[in-house]
Structures are given as C-alpha cells and as structure tokens.
Image 1 (tube, rainbow, N blue to C red):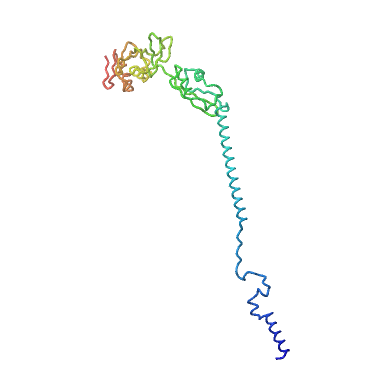
Image 2: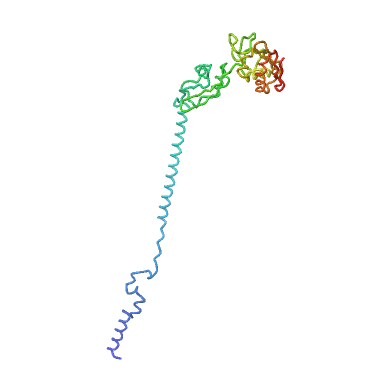
Length: 288
C-alpha cells in the first residue's frame, strides 16, 4: 500500500472519531454540549433538603415565640391579681363604698332615729364589713321591736326592716304595768293601763309559759268588735281560757282551737241576754 493511501485512511478515521454519525450525536447530547447539563432530560430535579442550620433557626424562632407567650400570660395574671387586691382593699378598708344612708322600714310607733341609734352603724363604715346579724340583734333590744332584718344595697345604703310588737293586753304586778304582746312577752312599762286593752290575770306571764301564749294568742285572733269588749283574760290551763266582757258578762272560750268559728258563734250569742256565754264547743254553744 502506498504512503498516500495510508494517510487518507488515517484522516478518514480521525474525522469519523471527531464528528461521529448523526444518530450517535442524538444519543449523546451531553458530549456535543460539552456535558453542560448533569441531569437527565425528562426527569424533575429533586428539591434540596434544608440543612441543619435552617432547622436550628426555625427551632429557635419557635422557642422564642413560646417564651413570649409565657411572659404575656404571666403579665396578664399579675395584672388580674393586682386588680383584685386593689378592689378588695378599696371595698374592705376604705370608705369608697362606706355606709352613707341607713333606711328604716316598718317603724310606726317607734321613731326611725331610735332604730338608727340602736343599730349604731358608724358613718362611712365599709358596707361589706357591716355585720348584719349583729346590727339586727342590737335593734331587737328595743322594747317595741319584735323582729329586725338588715340588708345591704350598693353602693352605700343599709336597710333595716322592723316589725313592731302589738300589745294585746297589759299585766299589773309589783313590778309595774307592762304591755304584753301576742307571743306573751311583757315588753314595755307604762304609767297607766292603756285604754282599750284587757287586763291579763296571770301570775307571772312570759313567752315560755304555755298558758300565757294560749291566752295572748286567742286575744290576738279576736276580731276588733269582740276585742273591744274584753275587759280581762285568764286561764288555769291552756284548755280553759276565759274572758270578762263588758256589762259583767263572762265568756268561756276553752282552748285555742277553732278560734274563727268560736268568734262567729259568740258574735251571735252576745245578741241574747245572759251572763255566761260558753263557746268552748262551737257546735254546741250555750248561754246562761
């Protein structure tokens, strides 16, 4: 083979090696572009995972936010405690809600000022510190007061509601003349027997005595037209109540049962002439 032929053959191989066939070039695009792309065509690239530094910063931010929430909650709690303490101090220890008005309800024969004096509530005393039971007990020490109830009304009013005693008879002994109420309590001394009240002819009347309570209870149940005619009342036992009426008439009442029926029957019997009117059994009354 000649030298010229050998050179041509080498050039042909060199050219084929450098350029290659079109099909090979299509199969190896990376080689033609100088391997500019390292990923295979048609496949999505994977997202890069955050590194340790990114995770650390996120954790620090979360811890910081949690600490701020804790601090905020503590501030709110402290503010609430301070508010409660301040309000409690104002209400309990200062005249901020102190008593400025003492109202008296139910007093008729007893002066309202007498009730206020007995209550003895210091002016501007914190309303919440007023002992209602103690004030009521002081008011009940008044002879004419049977019951007393004390209530508070914000911001500064104390209301005292009283029930006065009502005399149904009087008792006269070596201790003087005393009024007796419906519960048998001799509660007030007077100089003269009051007009219109019957004399209670018992040895030692009192609320603990059954006979006293029975007699005064019957007197309290009488309608006005009968009560005005009673001059004296007595009993040896709770079942033997007896009255002296005007015009020297005697009424035998019996026990404290069926008081309404007895009063109705007696009102009819008194229209008849007689001295003794017995309604102890209202179904079988008698006049003699």
